[in-house]
Length: 282
Ligand code: AMP
Image: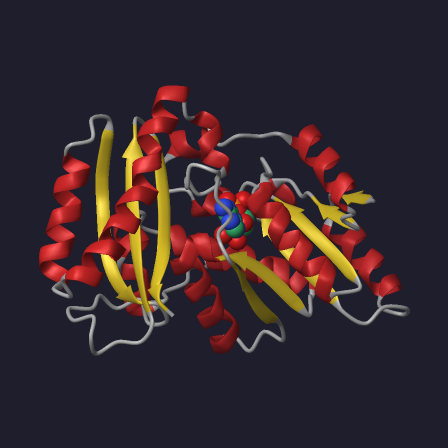
């Protein structure tokens, strides 16, 4: 497995490889890898001749300094995991390698970035758009893999690819969960054991929403019941709970008229912010 840190070295490596291989898959990550990330890599390995995993904690997508500074960094464990799963190349650039000193480029994804994550993390999706565009230009992959856990991110990336005519197919990969239902996340490493038990309620509330809608299709009433459930959980602070069209991400008022519906949530347990979603009608 190659571990490359400079843009020139990965470009040269890919240029040589392109002579003998057909399809390249890219899995962008911020490291502290868990089974959710490994699932993306498995998908890529199954569909491509070469899989490149990038590990880069992208400063541009953090709107809070503390979140960036405390983001887990587990490089040596990550390298071992990637070796174990048969990853071909790790691209692990520094911030200096990825960004010039005075980068001012910003993305505006319109209404999608004003909702949910966009509302609570101003500038986040612009930073995501920037780093993903850079990675696509550096690696020029045939396919790129993103988790459905970050549903809004997946929607934004699909828009980015369409609007900028990137020649890459975006593959969404289903969320990998712990046995408790908690969605795997690098941020879970920062949860204490009692906090982890509290965090399980994030997924429970999504399932509750789903169950309530089966009995009563009134979105407003069901949402309020779920909010009440969450209010009673000490140590958990809800940021948003939205029922949306899976593709447009626009909030929906009536379940009956829609065919693709997801419920999305963000909540904090202590200082750790967790997001999750489930599809309730596919
Ligand atoms: P991150 O390192 O958190 O930026 O995540 C890198 C990629 O892994 C993103 O496309 C995430 O959506 C995806 N991912 C993170 N957690 C999970 C999970 N539990 N299941 C599936 N994909 C995930």
